[in-house]
Image (cartoon, rainbow, N blue to C red; front, side):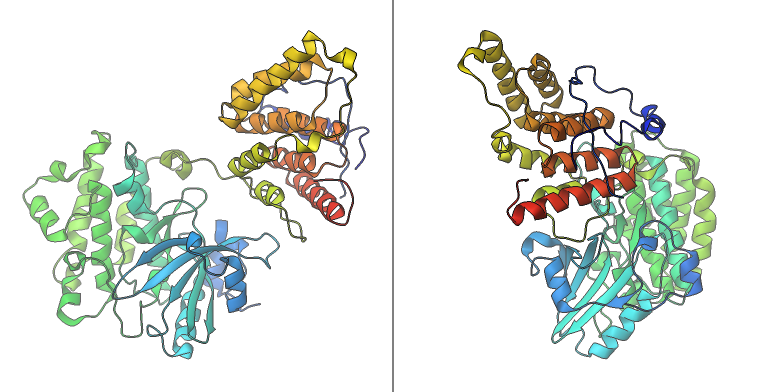
Length: 521
């Protein structure tokens, strides 16, 4: 971990491969010091049909398994209210938490749905139902990965979807709207999810609505697996306004595969209108040929009338009063597939959300807040930590004589002060300029300034320059874990995952050494 000749400076091929994406190291980087960083190099099985459908997040999760209550408490900080992501239903009281698995090497995020004991008094019935849903694995579903039955506790564990639900995208976000092509993609993907579930013998989906449509880390729509289980043993299946429920449910209180198609029709109406319109009202407008009045005004006419007509016709078929007159799931896919007009555009681009970037695998030993933030590639959290840490880690790196306190020195410190203000206020380009003035004078060296400028470069999408600054921070302070952590983030941004993982392990080892009495933070 000494500071000699960098393995990254000695491997031009690795960096050259990425430089056409991230042009150039910053010209202001102080290269007077040549520095280097050295690196050291439960559960049941799925059905074949499920395995064939594995892609994306589903493939990275363990097979369906039973979790202990202790594991789920640790994942959610004892079911803290800070971890609640949704609550719903007087008829089906339950709450969904997000959590982070502590015993998993990658400490992955999960979603945990918590039921009351009254909803499922029989633990065997609950476990059997969960296993049935847990056998499903598909790229269009936020898959169920486990459950917990412990005393009065009944919990389901699923893949965590980090982006907002379809309902929030459609109904709640001001000054934003989902473009037409993305709405068509949502409709198709959810139809594909329903068709897969139906083909695997799970055709009943309870209370399908826009809140059940989730978006994964890449912005792709996924259907929540929680709706594949009854809300409770008594079969209560709808917690939404009864105006949106299938007419046969109002007659006999039962859900059938045809009821799911009706609910899908209400989701199509949401996608078309950007509003939650009662089906009876929408059908009156469709019959009156007032289709354009139903279209979401936020689209501002940017949609194909022909495609919209096809979707409206499909919605009308789904909402037929007689269940036998509604299409089946294969009909949904067959109708919607030809309408896809931007197959090569990623979903995150159409949704206007940041691209998901893989962080390095988390080391085995527990991480500090800084290590945790770096392993998650959470630049906002890193920024908060660097602001709070201030310059405490610079102690002892500079010893200046009285004669060195020249006007140039005062100007240099003033530049650093301006950089600190800009850094605190998240004016990262200004911070880069000010910190560069401080660095270029060369009278003082500060690992903190290099770390801060490294983060600024990351936030300005310049990972090459960020890596150089993090390496310079290590030159100044060879055993500083923050310098290694910042290198790990920069390397992950440069898609050098193996090197990033090695660097993360180096940083964690330094923190462990410090806890045992060595220097490093």
